[in-house]
Image (cartoon, rainbow, N blue to C red; front, side, top):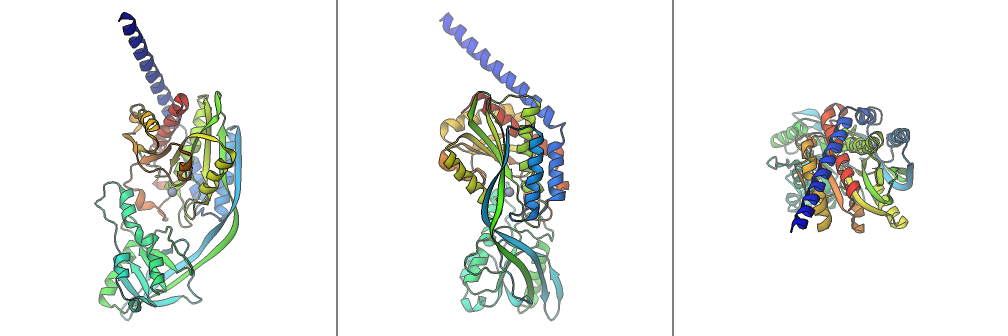
Length: 451
Ligand SMILES: [Zn+2]
């Protein structure tokens, strides 16, 4: 009995001791992250010098080169570009104006990817406003044919977290233009999926097959104005000019850097974000922030001499926005190399104040990882729960790897997302680096304990 008591006491103090040591290491990580400006300055560089980093663009390559040089300067064990080829799409210009007997004004629009181009001289056509795909499908083909379909359902602001709000609203952008094309429309305009009532148009992906319909996002102020004008004159016309290009077999890259583990170098902890951004966005929160945060994990491990037991690998994925080619190529390379990735983490919810982590993992991994939450709570992690994993690590699901996504306060994310508003001045240094602390902290705990 006495022996058992002593054993339990020792086990308890050892675990308390280890918790205490971990807290001290996390405090050190925070102390370093919150006093070091390299991640923040890297983000400033990406936004100012390489905005609009859509796959296939010059800026997407310039951004990769900048980051590669930065990582080489950190003395990583490996830094390299993973080359591949994929199709891309290029935006040249988008313009629209209303032509009516009574009124004449410009509309703020931006093409959706991969919108087709309008013919030489543009399209001038009547507009039919709908509240979503369902309403469109109930119409007669002859009422839609030859017209511009204007999807004008606003987002539902009563969601507390804006990510499900976005999920609820995005169908008319993702599938509306193709539905319009199938009913003989000549173009589509889609109310921007945003929480901000300004006139910055937001772009994003739309699924178009066959002949690519010209399709554009329209700013909220312009959408409301157009809707009001339609109430006065339902025969009004909109003139639309969209110029885009399809690019085939473009050479591009993922960027990979790693620091080898001291004890189990064959076990890999993977983390990253996506380097590309839409053509109209500086890509500060989406996803420059995620890229510089996860690259900063490498810097912090090096600078604090944390001596990771397992290999920590950073990946800047290319092409999350357009066709997710980078993440697919990366996952297939894991297949080929038969590598043992034990954990993958993505940061792609903006560089806002941290809130938690969501995870796709089997029960035992979930229980172990969620057990780290109390240690991370001083830095803002209020939950580690089951939920989505990021788009870029999602293809790794087939290997049964625990997939973790970093979550932040979502209230401002969709003010900026996929628009010119997603600029560096919207990023708060402390929020960004609190996020870096949480990510580095979780990587430290996973590395130390294994999975
Ligand atoms: Zn993103």
